[in-house]
Image (cartoon, rainbow, N blue to C red; front, side, top):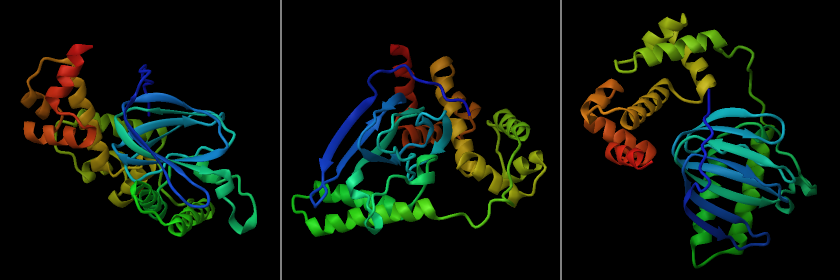
Length: 286
């Protein structure tokens, strides 16, 4: 999964930072951003970043080599540990909510907790933790706050993260996976037939797998269902054709696998926040 490192120096379009009340105040920042490569400076805090809008391909490192993953909305980026210089590369427009969690706030069982283990190594989903972060944001925006409520939310967030960090999967030994060669063949199959109707049965057959095991392996490989992955590829092709060809919008829609121009327009607007016309005009200005 190649990630192109953008060259932009200013990638933030909208930034709003709020602070909660409570015994240990928390800082929350919601921002919209374009594709970027950003260092994550070392601090005394844990940094949580919840994806709110825009599925992206992300690369990240905390001094131990680059790792990559697809990050859809509702997913937390890997938690940046205290005293650690990190770096992130994100390949598409997105909206994130970043929460600064002081080390002092993370004290389960009366001891100083310094490591969330696997939550530093890969993106993760936790509906309870995500809902708590969103509630903290709304509480910070409110003109009337309740310190006890905020403190309870903070403690609940820490508990949810500790639980997520210590939960072990029931079993991973029987989970189906793709070899490098097989995944390459699947990607080629998708690209070759992107302008045509694609079905799970077709892809599973090309991989020589039953549909159920193919779906399990596909989700493990990409973090996405096949239809989400194919839609992303269609959006990428449409964007590339808009920027690099003189084809009409209806032709680009069909070449990218959309049913018509309206379908392409609604998909681009919903997933990357731009219409085909805006993408093409933006490309002409550069």
